[in-house]
Image 1 (cartoon, rainbow, N blue to C red):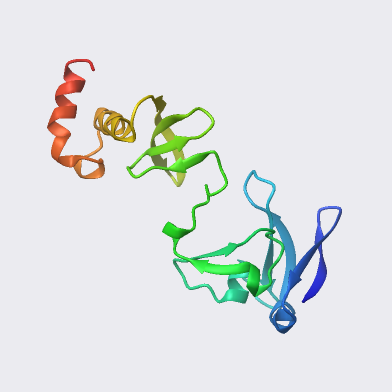
Image 2 (cartoon, one colour):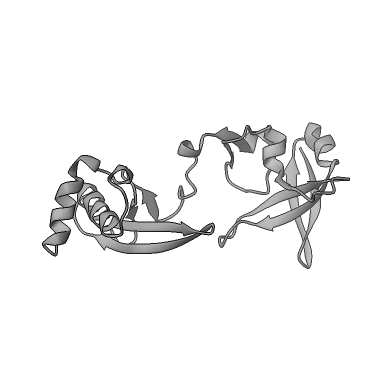
Length: 180
């Protein structure tokens, strides 16, 4: 195992890697990035001499992660030793793995562990930014939450093919007309 100090804001952070991957890391200008709003940090790099300033996540470079897959850290995200990394399909690598909300089995439905309710969320993308059309909680079963999602999706003009139960779209339309 080897380590090196990488500049971050006003100080340095330590990253660990396998000795044999040191030659790969030597090809990059390394820096530390904070992942989203959580407390996880990860190592990124820009290939030296590359005029495009393309940033890459170093764990993906070390693991030669194929396009369409994620490189998963088992624990500390600054630990880039191969024993701490694994390539995974997006379905197997949930960003919510340690979060209170767990993805449900239906479109727009997730379980909120804190509230002990199903969370129903309908989003749209406008110019690459997501906005919420509808967001609420559903007591009862996951199936009831999926039906609520379908009802709201139809109310906002989504086509029947984009809902959980397209064969029941006419029922949801009738419910909306009756004010349900």
